[in-house]
Image (cartoon, rainbow, N blue to C red; front, top):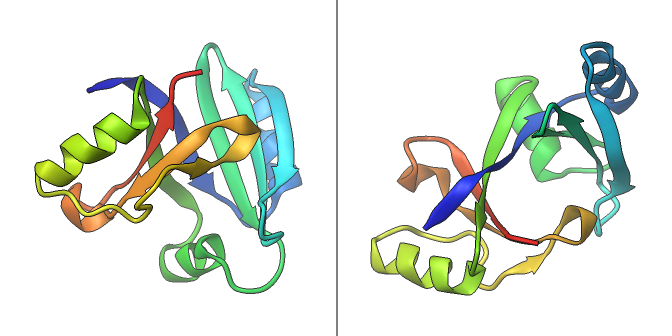
Amino acid sequence: MFNKVHHIGIAVKDMDGAIALYEGVGAKLLGRETSRDGNVDLAMLDLGGDLLEPLAPIQGESGISKFIERHGEGIHHVAYEVDDIKGEMVRLVAGGFELIDKIPRPGFMGHIIAFIKPQDTMGTLWELVEKE
């Protein structure tokens, strides 16, 4: 089962501008790094205990660049914290959900993650994040 919302992913064109925007309303930058494939700039900000993850395309074609091209900037995904990501993935598949990631993978800031297709979640991309 899901424990809580872990973070909200937000597709942005300008990472420096996004960080400045959220810091301007009181958020604290926890980390920033480039995705493993080198195509996406990632940041994590803490706003009073709630986490926001801006994602900006760097180069080439990526899921984020495609998302922004189709939908513009805005909410990209909602990530949910789970205790046992493999067990949760099995439970979701048994319930008829289709996974993007068939096995959990390393994510931003050392998290273990997996994504669920938005067609099965009323149009919202879900990310599972194993509890630290």
